[in-house]
Length: 60
View (tube, rainbow, N blue to C red):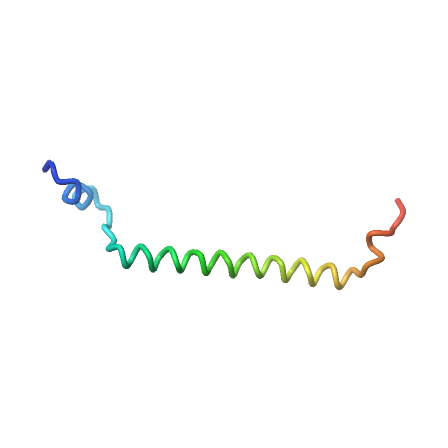
């Protein structure tokens, strides 16, 4: 084994990303996260609208 950590990572089988690739991956992950969060909010809003406001006033 060599003392260089870059060579060591490649020998283990890991992929070494460039800073541009890391930034691109992070931006893509954030975009996917925001998209999923917006979808959850949309489904929640649709559910509330379809159930109507009276659902909070029901008696048990």
